[in-house]
Image (tube, rainbow, N blue to C red; front, side, top):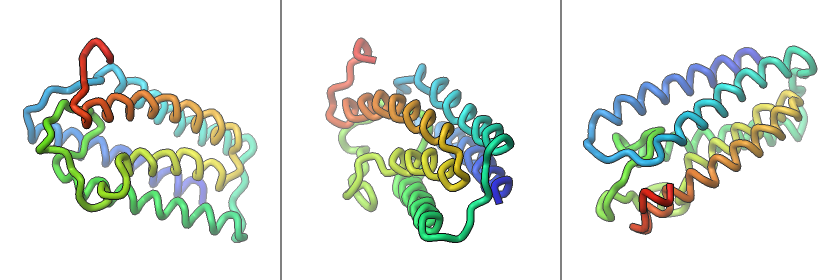
Length: 170
């Protein structure tokens, strides 16, 4: 089961990069936080490697019990959040952060309830997938690293959404 889940998420992340690249070409906006992208790529790539390596040494295939059913439900909820986020933002969905004006801010659909639904979904995935296979080291290290990264990323996006972005604050 591990290899199927791992492979699915590798392909899914690659698919998202293709969508992001396609969407980036559909508008002419100023990208901000470009330096953050390399950290995001590093964290996500390292996470996949860590998942694989830790599973080889101490991973356990999940059994059908209450804890794992709960984790799987949370994982499905995270997939739904990612889908709803991408659907609502349409061509505006990207792994890049752009300087946008007030009229381009999306406040409909899932964005009525969550300011950053895609990031919340990523937090869940980075934590839940390792926990499902008892990969506690990967879950702990990458939940912390991703949390630090997302704190900075969401701070940048929130400044843009409030119209307070200043290049010197990056």
